[in-house]
Image (cartoon, rainbow, N blue to C red; front, side, top):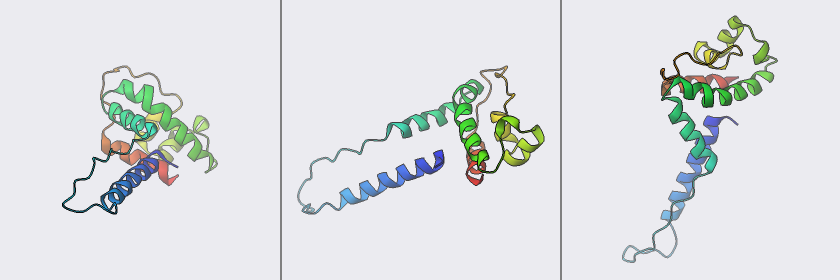
Length: 135
């Protein structure tokens, strides 16, 4: 299951819980209900959200935190297609993964020269996740 799919499932579950709490039997309009605590958010969801927010802030955050996650996902997805990320040529990597994703996950990627350089914008990240989902 992809990161985007996991996030979507958690959001759907949270909405379902919120809707079902609104229809608790025995609650009448004139009667005050005790405050219902918000459901706890899974730790992995919170960590993934932080990762995605931080990846927007700098090239260092992309390289140090987002890149390992994307490499792991790409490696697993490529195995299913008979490809190996660590043996992929630049041309093949760009063709299969697209320029943006390839630039982050390519095996020979070095540490960013400008660690304060731009991170990944949300539209580019979404496009990269779409590529991974299609593999």
